[in-house]
Length: 409
Image (cartoon, rainbow, N blue to C red; front, side, top):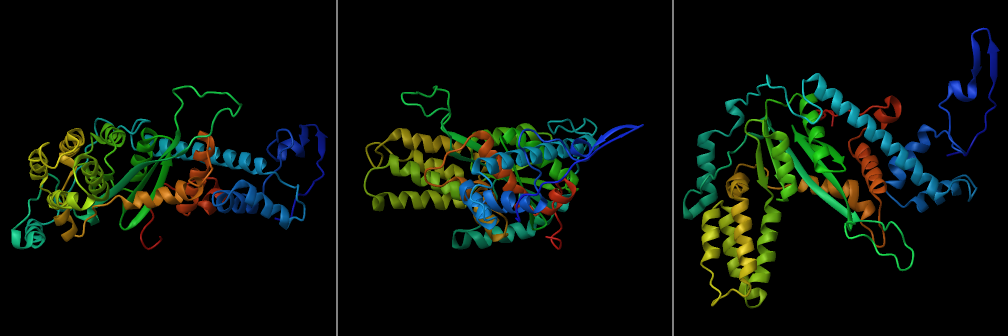
């Protein structure tokens, strides 16, 4: 914060060889590089550019130094990307070390000899479930339990996974330049929260496939392999595929479709598929949501089949799309009402919050666009901060994957 300092270096020639403090005592620099202090890295990177623009944090530092040209915003950007790349390298190395010590392969596959035993009391007592079904059903009678068992939250690990995208920066801004067809419009970051004993560990990676070994390593080093594993997602096909590819070996792994996204999907497709005003469509939507909330997926599909083009349907394709959506996610739609009565999670809102913390708050602003490295770097720096790992990183150059105890958190 005080500015820059120059130090005199020395070269000592002895019988043991030449010792040069410029390159033997410190890591050699490239070009016109500088050694960055712990305070600068903490303030400028983890609390600076991960919150505000590179230009803003540069102006702030230069104002404190009374030198408007001391540091350029491009310099801070490059430093942030290098720091984040180092974090990614160390994190991936620690993930591989954890998995290797436990006998896993590099992609998170367990040894053939490993047998995970989930204790019977990891489920809710039968009497408690029956009572919840009666209470949730009210006058209409007990609700169906559905195909998804009701877990004991104290013996479960909850994982919420999602992808968040920001605008991609154009590779070239020359007049008349046309981007190639395969160029994607967005830069994507995969985010996950792993929750146990009331505390979270937030993770991010450049793809959901890269995220799965991190989740596995977090579970292993937190000694949570004997717990039920509950995934909550928005229903994206890529997420579902990656989860079951990575955890198909795990006994009793469960995927639950987030209620908010299910309800929103019903509203969107019914709005496009039915005739009349929003007021006319509301009763059909309310009926479907009630059936789905109670876990009556079959009845909800039958309700859609009963709609005829001659009646309320304007676009049969959208109605059929909703029907297909419900059939595809049938095994992941629980009795939300009963889960709510049992005070179990129905939402992936923890990962939505993590999306905001790691990506959206900083990168989803008007006029901003990003490269793959630029977006991933800021998300990684924010991950270190959200997990409370700044001190550990700056002091020890390491990251702790284990989920902290509730008292420590």
